Amino acid sequence: MNDMGNESAAVVLRPGRDIVASTVEGFRVQWKEALAPGTASLTVDLSGVAMVDSVGLGLLIATHNTLGKAGGKLRIANACPDILGLLRTMRLDKHFILEG
Amino acid sequence: MESMDDEIMAMFVEDTREHLGDIESCLMDMERDGADIDEELVNKVFRAAHSIKGGAGFLNLQNTRDLGHKLENVLHMIRGREIAPDTRVINILLGGFDRLRSLVEMGPAGDAEDISGLLAGLSSLAVEHLPEEKKDDLARTVDISLPGGRVLFTEDRLSLDQAVRGGRMLYLVEYDLIHDVHARKKTPLDIFSAMEASGLILDCRMDLAAVGDLDAPPTNSIPLFVLFSTIVEPDVVSYLFALDERRIIPVDVASLLAGEAPAEAAPPEAAPSSPSPVPAAAASRETADPGDCVGPLRLYRAPDHTRLACAPDVGGSGAAGAVELTGADLALALEACLVRGLDVRLDFPPQAEPGLDGLLALVSAARTFAVRGLSLAHAAGAPAGVAAQAARAGFTLRALAEAGVGGDLFGVA
Image 1: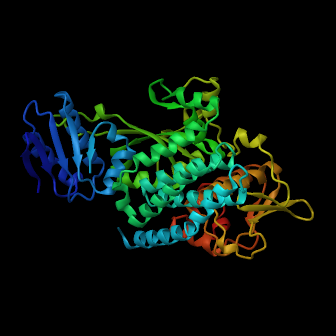
Image 2: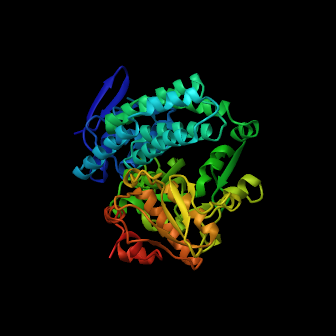
Image 3: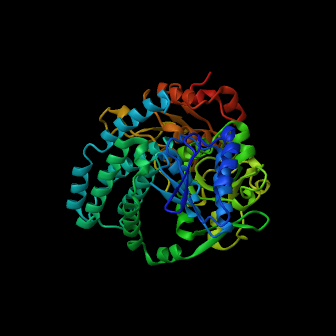
């Protein structure tokens, strides 16, 4: 399940499983709770995530939009090559910070 | 990965090892020749980069594809005598091919490697050797808009020019990731893999604001716009990607670059119903004479001068099966045939496998031959390799008939 951590004052979310239509609503509730008002730094650690479908991409973008209101940025860490390539092809690396 | 993908990946790695087996010695020979290039040698190295790029696109290996594309660009400029292969250039190419080999051996994990410095170095090499007018094109941009006038992309003129070289066309493709992808039980990766297997994604843009934030209700629409360059005609693009043709808008690059048209993509209904795949540039291109080579293919005129035979140029070696046939090779050769206005018989060896882009080139050419009242067929039935590829790619008799192409061309009964 979704694992949350607060490392060096930055929120880190670890979904731990695919971000797809069947899991997105659960993640949405948890991620909203994790984002205290004014949070400007959020990392979604995609270790263990093999697939992000269209609805999952929508969740990542919605998270980016929420952070953007506070002047923050969404960081994506440890994405597998397929997901990393997909985010780059979709030019989402212009909006998200992609790490590792 | 699924087992079939694993099998294809293993074949790709094996093919790449073969392509790159003697690449170092070829590059050293190119350095020895200097500005007095041996065209056959440069073509051999070019085709190695081109084939690896094509295979990587099919397998969605983005780093491999991007590096292959950059190497191909530099080799294209060497072939055109815009770059002399001196020691510095050859060292850069040696480093590039060495990295290409290691990326292929890594498989999908290679996409996690940072090759941005290498790509930038190859780009710089190409740019520094561009003629002045083309350097200007790199700095000058053109806006590409939806028919309503909304600007979606701003691209430099050089990239646009390159995107439509070799008979390719440029499309502005509009997806809705929810209705066009998710509702059809596909993933974004499926869509991009299919596109990259048959063309080049020039740019991509998402409408992030349309998605809303975490407080908004779940979105019912995620607009995605893709600027896509391919040899495939509009109706075949829609057939392949199961996308309504109204969402695939042809971009008139020639008019944009000439500054003659409003900088917006033409709506689909304004496009010709049977667009010719022979681009304006091809009309002025020197046509092939009987017996002349067009890439790795050779065109022969029949004794009665009523038709052409198009066959791999094996140089009398008899090693027909070793000839690489890519979609770009086929498109160029068939364009040369079309310009001559004669029926064509394809004389390929049984094991010829032109790849998915080659199959699409055949579909595109067959439609245009039919529109012009010309015949395009195999001399002795579809080669087994073509039939096997067509079957794997899901070409059915019904689908081909809907695209206006007979099954004989692909051995589909």
